[in-house]
Length: 205
Image 1 (cartoon, rainbow, N blue to C red):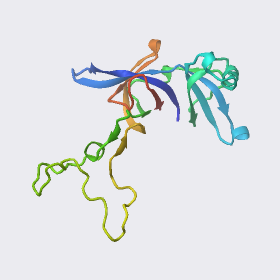
Image 2 (cartoon, rainbow, N blue to C red):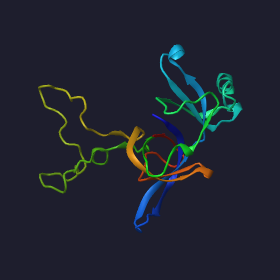
Image 3 (spheres, rainbow, N blue to C red):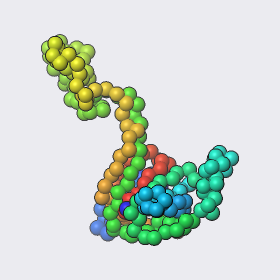
């Protein structure tokens, strides 16, 4: 799939031609540089490696600086491979937001916000005891029974319990592109996408 690396700027809303208020997300998509072209003969598969967001050379390793120098660019903070790219590209080419058109649908992948250690009510949507009787004076948000007694004498894998929430790769599909601002490399997409502001996202066409 063709795609670009971008940065989530934030959310806003716009009005359509019917006067309806539509929530949308603004993404700084590209420009991305082709930093490596993988081929079946050398790598065993075909893919394009794209780099986004310049990185200070003093904060980069010499190996990284040499790798990006082959493409005629500086070191990049974010590097992603895209397989089955729609168009033929060569090393050093720059791909920008003009590859998208208004009205088409894209998939956006990002890392969701980290929520820390959370209980079952927030993490899994448990209803809690709900102010019921039976002596539940301090167990309103407890998970309840998690396993049997003598058999199987353990908790089954996959049991929904408290734990770390968020910070996972999330892919949101079929989001409509509302606007493409080529002069500012901005992409306005309907709806919300995972991640906090200024986090990296991957847009698949």
